[in-house]
Image (cartoon, rainbow, N blue to C red; front, side, top):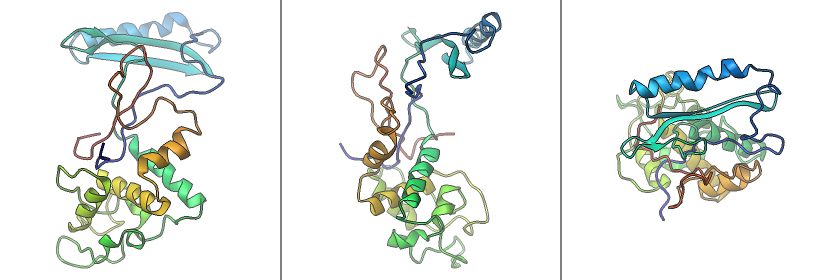
Length: 247
């Protein structure tokens, strides 16, 4: 199966920890009122009944104890399939902080610095110009692709791999002078992911698995959902394709 252009979709999940059991609900141990907590699912059910949302999963935790874990509404409106606390969700944009985490691991390893120019690792970015044809005052840095100030444009749709998508972005003019404007873009995060691939010598998803997910016990986080990913299995996978809107 080809690796898709964008990096990763993290599914909503309760992260594993030895001293944290999500389904062991104990509001008293958390120092919270069960009566007041009960207002939360009742209020969310009102939103479901009003047609404002299909369903909700809520977890409230304090001092290492779960005070509330509830599900209301539906995970599939058409079939009226009920929502469960372990329902599989696709959530976007968590790719970004996790890519930042991966990049900082590489910095700790001494593999690159965040002030390094992108073109040092991805030569296709050499000579990139601004929209007006001018040369930028400095080459894009890794820091700028991570903090959405690079000016890199989104590539055309339909490119199947991360390498192809990033190369396509490199052929486009920059939207603005790097470091001068903040603009939320997936293209910069894709670029950071591609640098991690090139420098580590590993496919991005393999790097994430071996350096972040497996060491942290994040067994329910991944790239593509298996065919049998449905409750009660708490296997929460997904892939974030670059051309999908995610805010």
